[in-house]
Amino acid sequence: MATANTISSDQATATAARADLVVFIAPMPPEQLESILGNLALEFRGEELLVATANDPAGTAYAEIRVLPVQSTNAVWPIAAVDFVNALHVAKENEAKAVLVLGPGADSLSAAALRGMVNSVAESKSDLAVPHYSLPVNAGLVNSAIIYPLTRALFASRVRYPLSIDMALSLRMAERLGSTAQKFVNQNQPDAIVWPVSEAMVAGLSIDEVDVGTRELPQPAEPNINAILSLVTGSLFADIEAKAAFWQRPRRLLPEHRSFSPMPAAEGAVDIAPMVEAFRLAFTNLQEIWGLVLAPNSLLGLKRLSVVEPATFRMPETLWARVVFDFLVAYRLRTINRGHLLGALIPLYLAWVAGHLNVVSSGTDAEVHVEAVAAAFESEKQYIVSRWRWPDRFNS
Image (cartoon, helix red, strand yellow):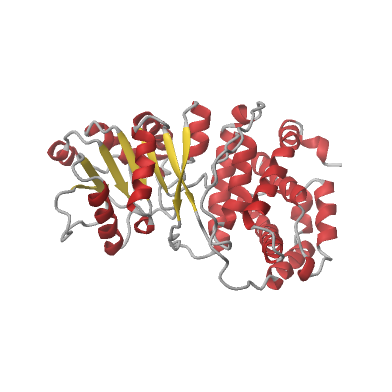
């Protein structure tokens, strides 16, 4: 199990020197690290740069880049709580002005993309700079279905990828994330997920979204989508629960004035029939659990959906928003075992995915549909606020 402060005092003393930028690179294959170092050497030539990584830098072609070894973690998610603790430690030891955090697969980001994120922070335009990725239509769907709509509705943030695995941080943002992460480490949860966007919103720190174009997403160590969905959704629900006093207050979502790189075209059709069948089977077998979690109107909406044929299958946006909000409330109240609760969400998520793919295949732009989903979550915010405060009112 990873622990905090995985950089020894001897290492810190030996390597501490002023650095304009600390780059914290998550564990990744050697060829990815070499490519990232090449981009850094190209884009940041002549600048004081320090790379902190668990990768072995031996044999690198970029000897001019200082590399500080840190202890590797066994985290399922690419950037774990202990990573933020260590990144802050390195930044402070070396009097850095900014921190760039890069997850596995970041070699697919261009040198200009790295520069764009760093400049946003270094030029004091933001405390947190996160990428706006251009991903294939069928990629990042947990984000499109749950993470982005919830973050937008509750934290009034338009950041499209709130759980980015790359980001640039001002020193005060690094301190905020390091402090939050340290609490997880103190609770013996060093591999916990930290949510940068919600932390920035609560702290009143500025956020910038940088168009970085395409990016290759890393393959998770745990290939089971059920495990990944439960891990990420459970962490997000816990973060929302911890910040309830913040998001229950009204907040205005600022209009979006920028455009970003378009999504790449979908690569072949996806057979949605198995997803629809999984939803129908769950509707039959999970009635007892769903009855404890979902409000009657949500259950009625799912009943109607269960008889729709795959060719015309689509989860209504408002129904999906209320289903997710119902599960969020059940998570808070511990209505049932949280593991079982998140497992019961999976067939509903698959139903949303099936409907989303149907919408896209019919000619609707994927981003247009995702924005419609997010707008539904926004319009239903009063529903979650009311359910949060008076959950029993919705049980009949």
